[in-house]
Image 1 (cartoon, rainbow, N blue to C red):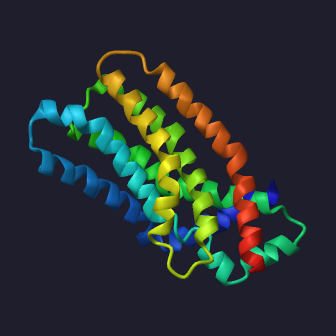
Image 2 (image 1 turned 30 degrees about the vertical axis):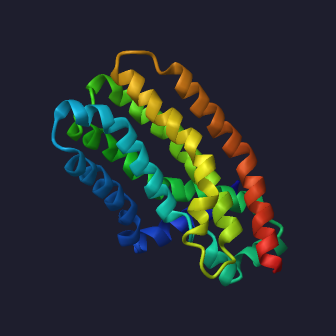
Image 3 (image 1 turned 135 degrees about the vertical axis):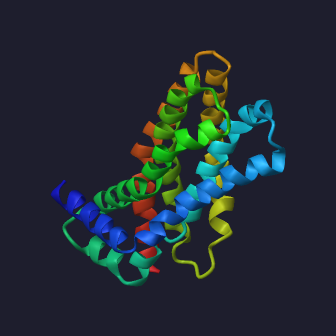
Length: 222
């Protein structure tokens, strides 16, 4: 546990020194949210109708944009190999890296999402559901995306392969997340969709680190 927190602190310090890169996801999220209304027109009713899908698509694309290089540098500089040879658990390394990545990329989106939702005329009554769905869904996106990142980190050109691999696994999270916000905006209970998101989150938290560790071991031995 001490090693996990130490590694997280290291990743957060490095990200702070290169904080311009950390803002790219938030900027990309903002650009997607702003461009959709321009393309669809300025009708408040239409914007409110498409807002849940727009916000979730923007969150998914922002998560995809940051995943390809998650483990690539560690494989190239030998960090993964040294971690495998050390007495520390590789799964602990994976947990620390993914949690730090979530804090750096998803938390700013969570903080800004209500403002973008109001700009899209999403009803205020559904903001709580939006935040809860993103809180449940974004860790699942990152942990599942970590599997694809680990599998493709050893490739020279993986920019298109990762989205193709991960998109089928991302679709249930996108569907349930957007549906939860939509039904909440219409005045219905979103408990069913949120429970399904929570189930997907638990599965990803439990299973993904083992799959990522196995993929990293395979990549380090090649």
